Length: 79
Length: 248
Image (cartoon, rainbow over all chains, first blue to last red; front, side):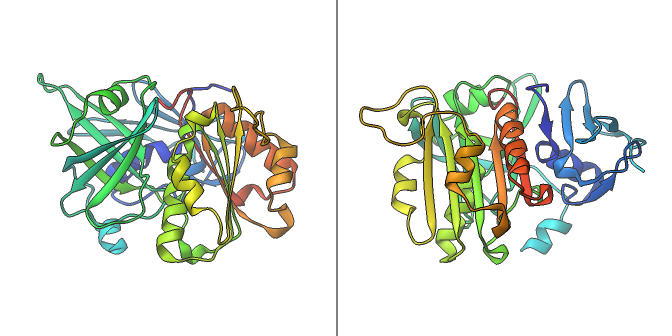
């Protein structure tokens, strides 16, 4: 376990900024293991951007990078 | 109110520091006045943005400590935090200063009186902050939901909101402390990290299907959530919030 790991609660503001609505209660399904969780419960790692990982199989669900004028969003890890 | 907050675009709002309240040697609460604050639910967050003279900006998310109270919100910040934002909030900010906030955000780690009980809150250190918002909201609403708080702190002096918790306990709210590093003379309470046996002692039992909220440093949350699942609590009823190694 990485002690720096956070969860979806920590990026509620970023997700809201990108999607325009509250997203931590939105339930999504992992494309790898098929587990469904609210985004508030997924594992979050912060670096140059934000990486969301499945709390069950740790596969990458999404990568998000937000700047003032644009956001790069890769959600390809969800089913 | 909730509808407006949900549909309105999230915008940065100026927030003025009204008061700074020391909680423990390393933790303080900052009371902000935020114009047009739409209200919040217990457990929700705000994002804080600081802008340096050269335009560099840093953001960080904080749990709101207070129950809804008009345009006032309280954040409780630990001084030992790493990072770009927390040291400034914990050491520099004074009444009259202004920063920027946006929120409230989040809807997952939230309890409302309408949800009812029983509720089990398990906090590690400053992980008590969003749990305190729930306790305060319960008290303000006159809710009779059964609520139990198990709070792990290093020492008696490190217990955040200690006096207020003592005042609020009773009438369906139970507060149990465990002190992991040092104990005052004559301490008869728990004196170790939260474990399965302690969770059994505090209750409620999994059969009562409590709503469970666990907040603290990541290793604390992982250990407590695992112990709760082993005790038969349904994973979907255990909501967790991790804040990294030291709350940074």
